[in-house]
Image (cartoon, rainbow, N blue to C red):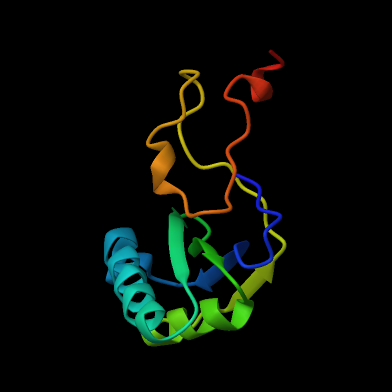
Length: 123
């Protein structure tokens, strides 16, 4: 997914958690989704696209679409899990493209484009 729309930029939030099992990936995702929903009602839109846990490294990553890093930070704060780091200018691919068909194309926000399904395989 690549967005050139300045209102829909991608950000990567990172949390360094010595014990990820305390909240778990599902728990963290639920907290962030709830906070994004609450904050989007009264402020700029924020959407959590993906959450990834690296248990060995004790790191949790959250991929967000938002208009600013501040909106992502506010979402993380609202979830009670302030991010240790937020990086802007992130590009990512979300979905299953090994089958040649992206899953659930309407799920991405307006302004986020999916590349051609075969492009990553040199087709």
